[in-house]
Length: 384
Image (cartoon, rainbow, N blue to C red):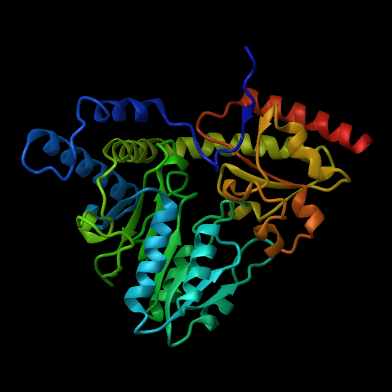
C-alpha cells in the first residue's frame, strides 16, 4: 500500500472530525426531513437539529443564534455580506474600504461591485502583513458604508488588529465586515468584544464538512440590513432561500462545539509543532518567515526559500508532503502570490515560498518526516 503524503495544508481544508461525521450520518438516512416541513415529525426533527447547530455556531463566536445565517460556505457568506450591504446602503454612500491581501472571494466581489457603481479603496499593508491604522482611518470618507478586513490571512496566518479596526469603523458609523474563515475554531473570536457587524466562516476549515458555512449578521447596535442574493421561499429570514443542508449544518454545529472545548489545547500543541518545523527549516540557512511571528495564527508558517531553483520545491515535495504556495483557490495560477507581493516580496522570492499549515491530526512524527524530506530535496536542488 502506498504511503500517504504528510498533510500540511490544513488552511486549504481539514479532514472531517470522526465525531462530526458520526453526528451527521443519521441526517442522511434516518432523519432525512426537510427543516422547512412544519406539518410532520420528519420536518420537526430536522428543524430542531438546525436550531441546535445555530446555537452552537453562535456560542463559538459570541453571537446570538438569531444572528446566524447558514450558507453554502464562506464564499457565499462573503458575497452576501458585501453585495447585500452595498445594495442596502448605497443610498447613503458607495465607498468601500478593503485591503490588498484579502482572499479572492473579497477582492473579486469588490471588483464586481465596482462595475455596479461602488468606489473601492484597496489599502496596502506593511512588510509584516499588518495594516496602517492611521492610513485606514484617514481613508474613511463621509460616503464610506463598509469596511472588509480579514481576521487572519489565509496565506501567511497574519492576524489583523480587528478590535482596533472595528472600533475605528464604529466611530465613523461604518459597517465592519470580517472574513474570519481561517480564524474561527483556531483562535478565540468574539463578535461582541471585537465589535464586528458581519462575519463569514466555513465548516471545512475547522474539521467540519465542505459545502456549509455561515454569515453572522448583527441585529442591534447597529442592526445590519442586507439584500439577499437568492430568492425563493424566504428561508433564513429571507436572506438565503433554498432547502437547508441539514446534515452539513449539523456537522458545522458539532465542529463548533468541539472547537469550543478543545481550542486551547489544540492551539498549544499545534503551535509547538509549528515552531518545531520553523526551527528545523532555519537550519537550512536559506529560509525566512513571512509575517511577524508575534501576530500569526498558531498553526501557520509561510516560508520563503531563497536559492536558485526554489520554485521547483513544491513540485519535488508533492509526492511526500502536501503543502501549497498559498490559497487553494489560486493554486493553479503560475503568478506569484498577491499577498506576498503586497508585503514587498520580489517575484522570485514569492514564487519560492511555501505555506505550511498544521492541524488537529498533525503528529510530531509527521513534522520530523517532513523536515527530513524537505532538507533532502533542498540540498539536491541547491547542488544542481
